[in-house]
Length: 382
Image (tube, rainbow, N blue to C red; front, side):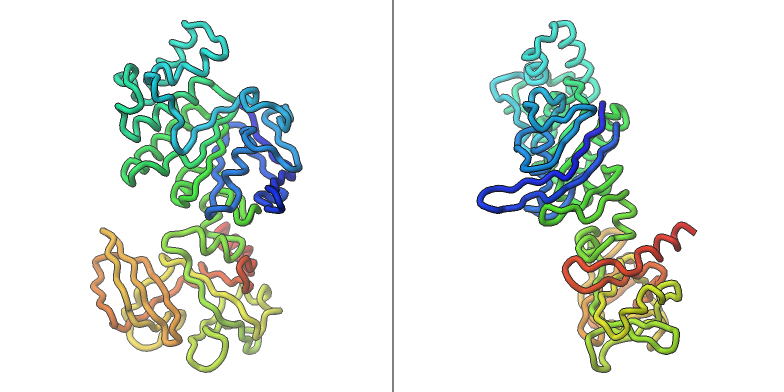
């Protein structure tokens, strides 16, 4: 095992398409790091550069102590698992697993030992004589994983390996992958567009957009303390409620006012800890953010402090919980996640109470910075 380090790595495709821009990332020995982001953000290109399947335009990649910029893929001592499994259709499961070892000249006894160990680990013992066409999608994925495991590489690279599985099997295989990593403790770089995969699998999550890293942190920190508007809106299902408005000061107190003017928007007193951070944003546009689970039903009627007066538009039952979509007086749509046993009907007027210790304020713009991130960090740490 070894750490994987990318230093100022860039990739430009002709004529001038910048797929990855000055990316810096260190995957520690035994760490599981997930690259996540929308299509075209550069995550798969990054993985392919580490694998040697794509030449880098500039920068440096190290695996262990070696700089591998000019090292052939087969000599990088990594194993890659692809989205389409890439199994040899004419070979049995055993031969698929053993093929890479055979090419490298391992003795038959060593090959048998490694293949049988991986087969037991992944529950493939009864499938060794079958060919890929006789396997289910989940079984093929296990064979692809086993083929990587027998190599005993310094690092695993996964390129959206679960995207071809159905929802139930994807959840099951995800859990098996996590368990497998705990057993093997092999350095792993994993690419997915599925944020749920990223949050459940990764020791750290790297959120990318337009070839750049926007945030690299633990899954919980990325979720609770997004560094900017893009991360806040991308991570979370349903995503964070983001409401346009402005900061208003009265004396020393600071308020968020919904909307860009007029009297239709609601006003909320901001936590005292945030006042110094928004002092320079008086009467300026900001974006107010609150997660759906930080909104709760307030059974009292009439206007209440720190509660949105809303009209229910849609109720989506999700088993033990439900997502409630509602509209404010100013026409802003909010979504709240709550217990499914509360009966709500469309057009019903309710108050949604906010946990003000969990709200965010962002600068406007696609990647506007989180103005209150440090305050939230301190509140949780205390």
